[in-house]
Every structure is written in C-alpha cells, then in structure tokens.
Image (cartoon, rainbow, N blue to C red):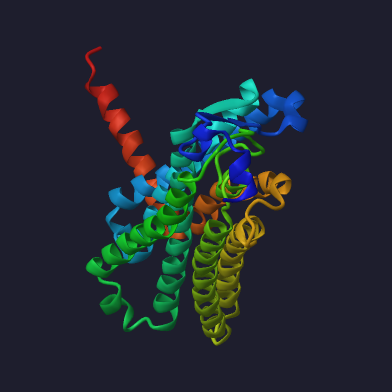
Length: 330
C-alpha cells in the first residue's frame, strides 16, 4: 500500500469523496469582470454568427456545393460546438465570479472540449489535403474528392476525435478525488483535473500526452506537406498577380494554424499535465476565443465565391421583403 493510500480516509479509497469542483477563472482580473464579460460575449456571438453564416450559405447556394466548402462548413459546425463547450462557463465566471460544477458535469465538459478540439485538428489536416489536391493535382481532384469520400473523411475525423480523447478522460474520471477541489482554470481541462487527483495519474498523463502528440504532430505534418507543395506550385505560376493573391491566402491560413498549434503545444505537450497550470489559462484563451473569431474571416469570408453567394442571398431577402410589402393591403 502506498503512503498516500494510508493517509486517505476509508471512503476515498473506495470511491470519490468530492462531489463538485470550483472553477477559479481569473481572480486577478475580477475587478474587470463586466468589461471582460462584454468583450468575450461579443467575440463569442461574432464567432457563432460567422460560422453559422458559412454553414447556411454553403448549403443554400448551389455554387458552393463542392468539397472545399463542405469541409469548411463541417469545420464551422465543429468550431461552434467547440467554443460553446467552454465560453458560456467563462462568461458566467466574468459575471459572477467562481463557478461550481458537479463531478460528472466537469468530466463531461473536459471530454466534449477535447473531442471537438481533436476533431478540429483532424479537419484542418483534411482541409490542407483538399487544397493540396485541388492546386497540385487538379486533374485527379474530382475523382479523389467524390461526395462519398468527403463524407467518409468528415466521419473519420469525428470518430478519431472521439476515440483519442474518450480513453484518457474516462480513465482519469476513475481516479480518487479527496480534495482540494478548486480548479485554477475557467473550464474543466485534463491537466488541472489530473493535478487534483489523489491517485497516481502519471500513466494516464503519459497516455494523454502520447495521444495528444499523435493528434497535433500528425495533423501538423500533413499541413506542412500540403502547404509546402502548394507554395512550390504557386512559385511556378506565370502571373505575378496570381502569385501574390495565392501567397496572401496561404499566409492567412498559416497564421491561424500557427495560433492553434502554438497554443495547444504550449498547453498539452508536456508529459506531466499538472505542470505550468497558471499560464495555461491565458494560452487557452487563444484557441477558444481568438482563433474561432479569425477562422470564418480567414478561411471563408475573404473568398470571392462566398462574397458573391452572400450578396445574392441578401438580394433575395430584399426582393422577398419588397414583394411582401407590396402584397399587403393598403
């Protein structure tokens, strides 16, 4: 028997004593609570509206019924689910201070957040490959990216995200929690939960580290392969204007990739997830607030085809409103 087991009360050896956790949030910035609430609420609503607009326009406009926009609308849906798993909790903390969350709800949030996050990275890899095939292999692109293949790829991303994150979260939830129960974060993440466990969690942390390593670096290598080949193809374009436009698009995509991978590598790429918890909160804001706000603009709303689809949709709405007004009896 370990010394820590001897120190535990009898009930904590056979079950979990803690029934709820307390999310600490940002105690140093509590005096700015209302301001931070408004800023993050606006960012959250803008992210939701931008991503939902992409989904609606993609399915409404027949010109956007192609693989790239199917993947982008899938990515937008996942982004909406990803930020909704944590941002409402953050807003509640800014508004009311520390928040209590039940044991089950906390681990559910941790799984949902990590599941959508991992799916995000798999979809980014698929988006990178899609652009690589469209630009570097244009003749084979329609054959490879058939509707069935698109559906299989998106489903595969969801299944992989589920499998990679479910195992370590379920294993950690079986640990003993005997106190303290204050989580130094604004949501239930794997690292803070591992640090509060009264059990030995090193093997679970190493499993999570290895799985996160596979997710991040496999998808990163795919993105690097795709964009390096895209850049090599762009360099050979005859028109300087075409080269400049293509480089502009690639550079904005790479900015989002850098922010997402940089913040996640900082948070999760350490064998002991319980280390560096204080700085994880700030880094988590990057991939839960900043990048979801940038993604709709960079990946889709700068696109000319999407601009035209939005203009056409707005024209249809105006025309419909005009006819309705004229149809009303005077």
